[in-house]
Image 1 (cartoon, one colour):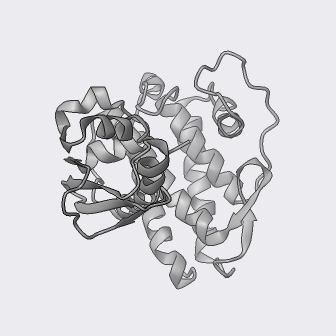
Image 2: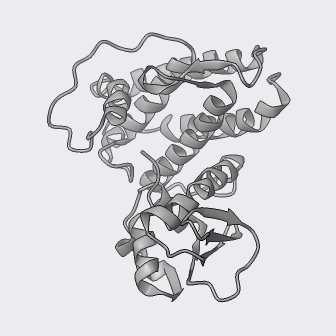
Amino acid sequence: MTVHPSLQTYADAWTQSIESIAELVKPLTEGEWNRRTPCPGWSVRDIVSHVIGMECEQLGDPRPIHSLPRDLYHVQNDLQRYMEMQVDVRRHHTAPEMTSELEYVLIRRMRQLRNESRAPETMVRAPLGTEQTLELALHMRAFDVWVHEQDLRTTLGQPGGLDSPGALIARDILLDALPKVVAKDAGSPPHSAVVFDVNGPVEFLRTVRVDAEGRGSVDGSPSLGPAATLAMDWETYYRLACGRVRPQAVEDRIKIEGDQALAAAILDNFAVTP
């Protein structure tokens, strides 16, 4: 690929994850496309439809004209309605139609990236009629396709990719959300610190510190006498942060030291993806 150097990491991660998705779904039978995934309300077909739709929007294709059913329990806000449009319009597509469209979109997007000459700060299309920089758009696409690759791997019993380039991008995006989770959503007291000790394919130790005004920040240095320490494996961390599982379902995989009530409040607010 010949994108701007600052975009290359995101382009490479996106490519690996989306090619993995294509390989995962290529051999599926018609019935397997209807299997429920950890992504709330979405089947295998729905996830692939979402990926296709979002990449089509990056290509500048017009959005489908389609009316959503009123009984979709998982659609509760404008962003979810926006995302669901590309999904629902494909709900009756056959397996060959899905794989063919995914393959065609991949060819077009990879050609677009190979020929990309715009600067990273160029404003491009974003959901809900807004705009974002090209760099942010590709950053978020790399994150999105990695998370959905993991949804499909979980559903299909094909583990892998937990330490891929996309996983590292997901780590950084999810860590950026931690200060708000700890300081604002969970209500950690001023002058407190909460440590996250994550092991496994992606390993890190981070401390969220809350200042006198109740603002949170995250760094990689340890804390002496934190209010709470939460230790877990990377798969549990990302699944909680992406809303794929509730804390009660994985409590045996989480070790908590210190303020149990604060830790529970943090976990109750841990999901940060739309």
